[in-house]
Image 1 (cartoon, rainbow, N blue to C red):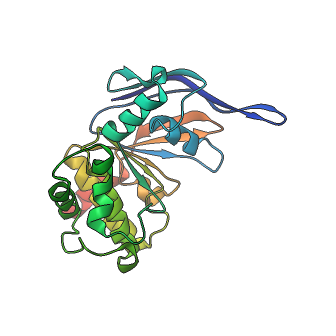
Image 2 (cartoon, one colour; image 1 turned 30 degrees about the vertical axis):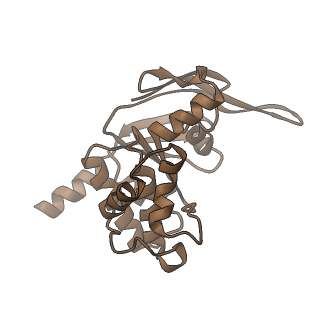
Length: 234
């Protein structure tokens, strides 16, 4: 589903060019749930922008569902974001005075989709908020706000969900609830990539990729989640 080949990203600074990503090679298969980890300054956010088609690399190729998105125009990239990628952010990015149903509808409005209300209702019911349709963000807990954000990310049936520190603003109980929801969505077939620095979040993922100084330094399967689930079932 995702294939990065030799991805670099440089920014022009007053003192000269600064390279943030150094030749990233990475593949994410359909149905995976991947944690991208690393310390501050490792390049996680820049890589997130590349994966989400919010920015383009300086060199290299990015193939999403077989399409080289590095060759697309800004308008085409916008269309790819709207159709293939669902975003979930730490700060939720909900419209404050708009209820949950309308917040989830918005991507459908931009894409000119009909029957928006029923689709938004179904998405909210899918994340367990069927009884919170008319609540505005100030009437919701942090975990509920993030569920609304996840419903919004799902509304266009994207190829991939990108989550940037999705539990960073949540307490421990809400973190567990949100990660269990991501696990359920992944089991149902959603491909999910999570940017995080939290080990307890990465434990839910089937694979972990570590970045340091703009390079992939480790890429392996994460067994903690399966060990924990097997222990519970036993």
